[in-house]
Length: 165
Image (spheres, rainbow, N blue to C red):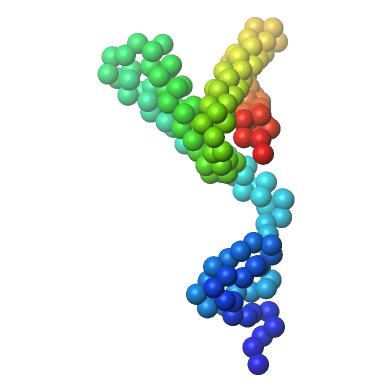
């Protein structure tokens, strides 16, 4: 007699409220949806991974353009735009699992994403001035502190403003 936990499923069978197609494979009835904590941990992990990749794209683009003789101001602007587009696409697809509903919604998301990144750039710059010029903190320490603030702000803005469900 087969184990009660496992049973053969037909072509289409509802498992935990979702349809799943199978070709007579064994499926455990212990299959569970991911808990909210597991989902949050995955989301944050993916956000950090793609954040590192975004930073590498920014630095690599800037470095290559400067080596080619492009003025650093133009190089950093181009690097910022490319990095933000990369961040938008990866955050949309892999971090927040955003599904395109319409061209209008996609346009709203892109505008909100760029606007939020520009806003957090402003927060970072203002924070650096405050920490360094007003409080006399070191430049490196100030940059690290403001980077941590910006990472958290970017995550919150992306989750609740840009890719809200």
